[in-house]
Image 1 (cartoon, helix red, strand yellow):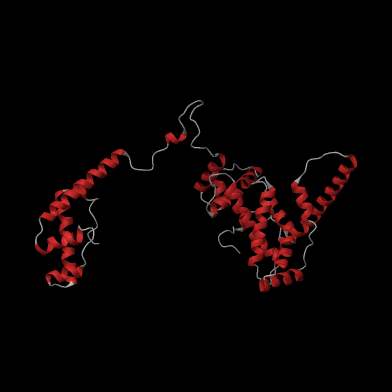
Image 2 (cartoon, one colour):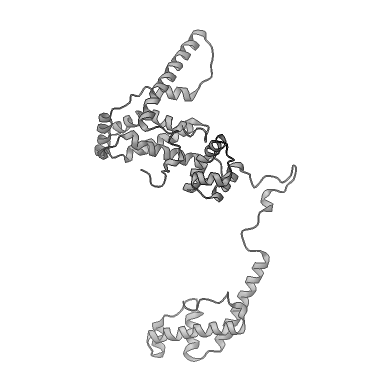
Length: 336
């Protein structure tokens, strides 16, 4: 099962989501009725010579009805053939025999996303993924396993296409997206005022999350290129703050850097001997010498050069802060 896509069972009420076997059984007569109606309609059209609108959903339901359901033994044999031998024909039969299952699951999400065929198409992708990952040796029927993949792909599709700006990115938000309005209607039917606090208690989420989701669902996408007024050239983009620093911040930063650079040069002028060489060749050089290079020049160890360097850094920090306390935030980390 997909670790990053699956939702809790709470995304659908138990009373609204039938078990996989019930889905399969209810899909068969429904599709059968669709097929019969479609054939009768075609006969009537041919007889009368009339033109009627083409319904792709009804035609799809009539087509998938032609694929027979599989018994437990047939499912197991096909799944073994695909897992052991990568038999594409076996995978094809597993998919086509469960297309009606996808339709029944997709209908549960039709309220959130009106285009049923789009949901069915995404659910079919999840069905194929289920075939690829199904283990026939676990003792579980394939539809019982596939229902999780189908739901996961449909849920992801709904959340990603509800609007341009995503309304649910966390598990709690996805739970609210599918259940908030349903729980609100249930509370109102019971005579309660469906406020954020009561909804949060019923759905076991934070009150702030309920308020945030209500605001998201009540709002709409708005282009930043939308004119502020009719006939105006100004747009919403003109009112957005720049993500970069302000002019005042840029001037202050530039001045701080200039002052810091001057103070560092002044500190360097106070050094002599080995400390002066280490400061210029190690701390200020674009291509600093190694500890060994400086040690060889003065006949001392690398460790001694490192100790001198640390002492210079501490002197530098003390010098800068003593003369200019305002440089506290600009001073480099001398422990490096």
